[in-house]
Figure 1 (cartoon, rainbow over the protein chains, first blue to last red):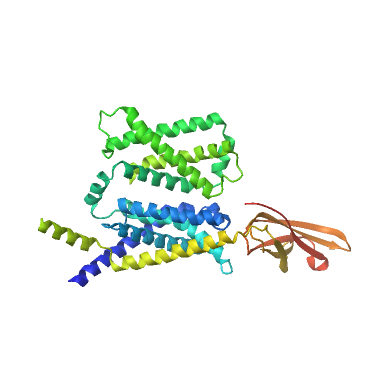
Figure 2: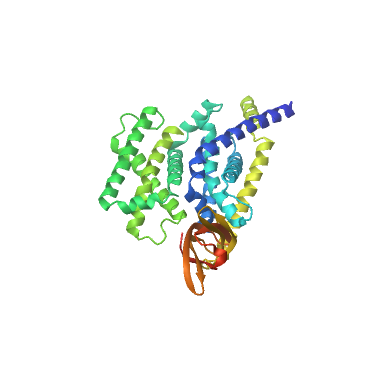
Length: 278
Length: 138
């Protein structure tokens, strides 16, 4: 009897694992096919890459808690889930990079590790999200968890959404190039548009019936509690991602701010959409 | 009450991570720990010596309409060379006959990349020289 329970659990886990691989590949494919990502794998600052991997651990565990590909009940299970996601991310990244001919015999170990580790980061997010997006059982329980997650949880989800979208576009040269082509006024307008779109999403979520906003909440309350906070998170995350990829090195403050606002645009949309999608 | 706690117990058992999950989780832990260790080690080494690139000739062969000199650029320095240019020249008795150039996107530290130089004259009849001529920081 016990054995069959264990076997059933293992079978379920195997299905979850297959789903996780699917998620890892779907979510990371654009980055697997981005040449800047391959290059960053070897010339990115080693300390910043190691830090990125460490920073993602609590994010993966938290994401597993809210959406994960295994129903979890204890905190340790979420930590295990985070490592499972990393394992899936590593294997998926290694497999795809190998197929693309980007890992060759004779390459220094450091280059191989760097390339795989960097790609494993977005892939692992896909692995965790696979369950909530590729379907799964126990939807009801998940809804319960979501309703009870409160303001901190909502903010966390916004951060994950911002991080994911920012990570997807930040490696490309275009982020800095766009900032070079804009004047301060364009950047201000982009910041205003980011805020406006975010606020529109906040209202969409309200209609979705997820946020704890009652219909008689004044607009500025939601604006400050969700939109402004969300945008601040999006900007901070954009700055962190740009710094990680060495895009801020040797730049003056004005250009750092401008690049941050440019990357903050997709990050803001990611933050706002995360609450709707996840 | 007792019934409820028993139910919760049962639920916990059902939801406890299966063995396979712990195994895959452990693999993930090993992979992450290895990657972080390697990266931190590289960071601590603090090797920031500039690119030190040497170019060697791998082979010379005829091509439709000319000749191809295959070269390999090896970077023994501690940092990546971006947009590395390789210059090849054919000369005879100190007089330059023909010049050719190739650019390699990136040559990471302690790595090598291959490239090719085209010539119209047969390099075997002349003095062939290949050398790296410049790079930019990535």
